[in-house]
Image (cartoon, rainbow, N blue to C red; front, top):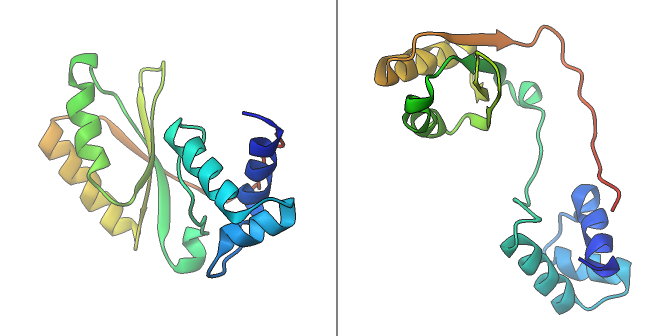
Length: 148
């Protein structure tokens, strides 16, 4: 990555314009051509620097409920368990950790009953019964920008 790539990443991570031609606006701000911005963003996505471009929403303000889940999964069953968990569209993150509870994931759904139902389904399908549901008691949202 060069300084132009870094400038583009700094600009789009929190200041991505919501207009019909966002890359043209980013290009204007950085004194580049729209095509150069598009090509560089495409390349950064292809090489894995950019995972995705999309909105971040406060699920509770949209009347959704979220929770953090943790499961004890034997190593030989990890792939199957993670495959089942990842089928649920409300799973936003899924992590493997060096801990007895080795699989951690966040889950968002319309309400806690939907989350409990999904966790029961996951447990039945995978045979993993030690799954914790850890809803937040208080939300501490922080904004993270990576100055490149």
